[in-house]
View 1 (tube, rainbow, N blue to C red):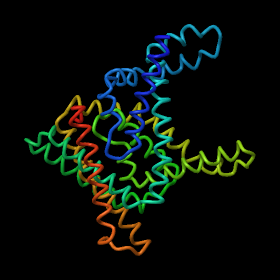
View 2: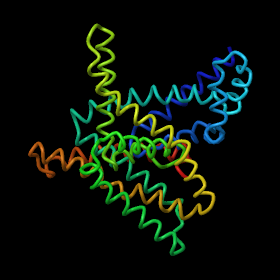
View 3: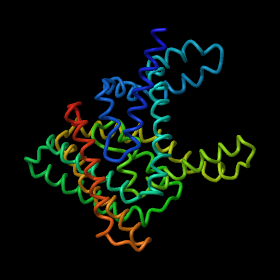
View 4: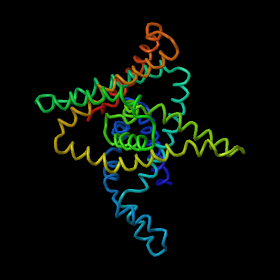
Length: 314
């Protein structure tokens, strides 16, 4: 009974992380710190390697099951499975809600995202030391990278499977970095709204297939989801490791770059709203009040989290 309760607790912590991961501006890594599992998560993720994966998969053979169980324990597999289930559940639920909100109230939704991002950037910059020329260059580079990508990604990258794969690798790797939001990076890359809509279509298609409908919608929306998940797996065990090595080698410079990415990304939700307004014919002057109110609410949520959790930092 105690073990079941322990795994339920991990699942619920995964729900909290997944909710944060699905919302731009709030990091699942931050939530992992809040709920006290960040170090265990990093140890488990970095323990996964090709050899252990091979040993676990080999467990389908009766003679290799003991070694497979040992390899599974070495990577804290039970913890990763329970946490991953919670994260997956939350991401599905939140992205479905976001898809509805982006359809019905896009200006307020992106305003909320803007507030989340802005407040996160303000809080995190307190942990950044720009005392050397190299760190200043890194900060400017991070800002320009996100600022320019925010205008380029949504219009030029498109949604081809290689782009979706790369986006998954980048977004999911951010999960292990407190303060850096994977969903924010998806907005910068122009993939956030696309993936939210694709996931909703896939789930609706599954529901329709179960009730007797065809599988056309499921088959049509599955490739981007598979590509994104595959990219996420690759990113989690490659990009995340590279960023961790960069933090170990040049922590202050790397942090300056990462936090400046958040500042530069503030352009993304503004551009998204501008595009929506241009399509609808509405002027910024009439849309700005609801954008601003939603931004204040989003910023307030981050400030409350930081004040009472005290861990919105690297």
